[in-house]
Image (tube, rainbow, N blue to C red; front, side, top):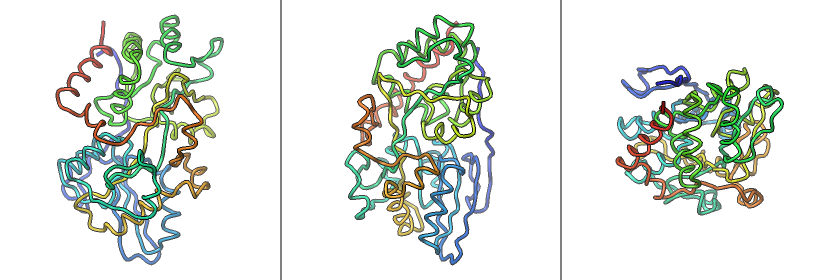
Amino acid sequence: MRFAYFAAGLVLFTLGSYGASAFEIEGTRVYPAPNSTVTLKIISTADINVFEPIILEFQRENPTISIDYVIASSTELMKALHEENAEFDLAISSAMDLQTKLANDGYAQTYSSTATAYLPDWAKWRNQIFAFTQEPAVVVISDAAFQGIDPPNNREELISLLRENPERFEQRIGTYDVRASGAGYLFATQDSRNSDSYWRLTEVMGRLNARLYRSSGDMINDVSSGELALAYNVVGSYAMSRLPDYPGIRIILFDDYVNVMLRTALIPQNARHPVESGILIDFLAQLSLRPELTELTSLPPIDTAHLRENSAARPIRLGPGLLVFLDKLKKENFLQNWVSSMEQE
C-alpha cells in the first residue's frame, strides 16, 4: 500500500464486567450516582468528552442511575452485540446502517413513549431505533495550507483543486478507512448514491496517497497540527467542538450536497435495565429542549425546520434501505472498488 494508515490507540480489554470480551474497547468511565439503585451499561461510539455533559445532566435529573460508559468503534459495537451477545443496556452509534441491521436481526427491544412519539418518522424505525442528533459530514481544512488558493465549495471544485495542486496535497489529505470505520463506510456508500463524482474524488485522493483514519477526532487533530491540509467526511459535531481550541482550522459545508448522519440509540435485546434505558432514550429524544447541552456538546438535536433551511442537506433516512450496502456481495464489491481507487499505481 502506498498510503499510510492512522488510527486511534485501541486496547483489547478483558474485563470481568464485560466477560472475556474479544471486541475492542477504546475507553471506559463510570459515573456513580449519589443515590444509586441501578447501573446503566452503555456502549457508545461517542467520545467521553462529547457525551459527558449529557450524562451529568441526565444524572442530575435521575440521581439514582449510575452510568458505566464504554467507548468502542461502530464496527466493534456491532461485533459486541451481534457476534458476542455482550450485555449492555443501551447502544449508541453513528453507524445508522449497523444499528438498523441490529434491529432487523432481532437484537433490539421495542420501546415507545410520549417523547419518542414526537420524533419525526425519518428519525426512528420500528420503535426500536431512535435518532437524537443530526450531524453533517463536512470537510475540515487548514487555513495555513490554503493560503493563496480558494477553498472548494463542492466536490467538483475539490477534484479540480487536488488535480491542479498535487504538490500541495500529496500525503496531506485525510479520510476514513471505510474498511475499519462503520461511519466512514456509511458516508462513502451514501456519497456513491448521491453523486458519480465520489469515485472520481476517491481516485484523485488515491493518486495523492491519502492518509486513512478510523476516527474524525484523529483527522481533526492532524489538520490542526498541519500534517493534513484537509480532511474529507469528518463528523461535523466533532469539528465544531474543536474549533475553540484549534483556531487554525475551518469547516466547509459543500453546496452540492451534505450527508446528514443521525446518531441513534437502541435498547439491546438482552438489556438488564430496559426501563432505565427508556428513560435515557426519552432524555436524548428531547435534546432540542436543552440548548445548553447543544452548546456544551456541539451535538445538534433533531430539528426538521433547520434541515429545510439548507437545501443541500441530505438526511440519511433510517430504514431497510440502509441494509443494501450491508449485503455481503454488495459490500465486497464496494470495498474492492474503493481499495482499487485508493491503491492505484
